[in-house]
Length: 226
Ligand code: ADP
Ligand code: ZN
Image 1 (cartoon, helix red, strand yellow):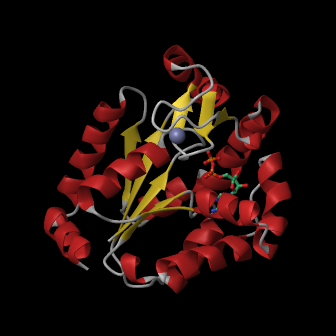
Image 2: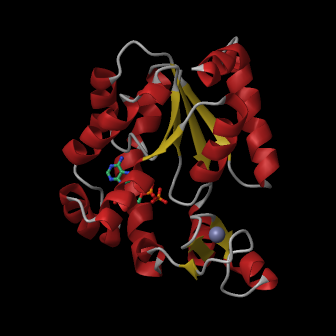
């Protein structure tokens, strides 16, 4: 099973992807996390990607496809996986079929309007210690500037600065939304209302998954045993 999460930046794909991973056992693969990791390690791929990411532009398809291909070729992905942030263009979706053909797929599009996105991303901070995601108001209430899980300092992603947020949204609306039509035509597309409490949204996702993928819980068990 291949679960593809679509939705604008800051729609909650990462949070919901982690919950899906926790319940069904499939590993969540985030193209953004893989890229940020390459940037931090200063690999050639990271050096190539960094400027595009900081400007809110997409990294080239070849770079991203190669990176995803390497990741999903590993043992833990054999029984299925969750893709967060990939594919982001119709061309990437076509390449995905080439590198991982013959697998069932389901697409969950987490819908959140632009105004809510801008508010969320401007308030988003990442823990430099454990990588967890915080919303400024909530984080500041507990212990200003520090992660309540590990005490690490909270930092803002370079691309969460307001000019870059606008650009990322624009890139999403022009380059990624054509995937809706693409996946609707393949009959694997499901829209999920992405506003509300985290648990409410996850309940919507569980309902779609369990309705659309018969035996999902069993498949997940098989994959967890590997
Ligand atoms: P968000 O979805 O919140 O914008 P991500 O962490 O998914 O954040 O991505 C951050 C950046 O990484 C993107 O703005 C883009 O530059 C790059 N990126 C991530 N995934 C892809 C992809 N599939 N294709 C091209 N670029 C990507
Ligand atoms: Zn932390």
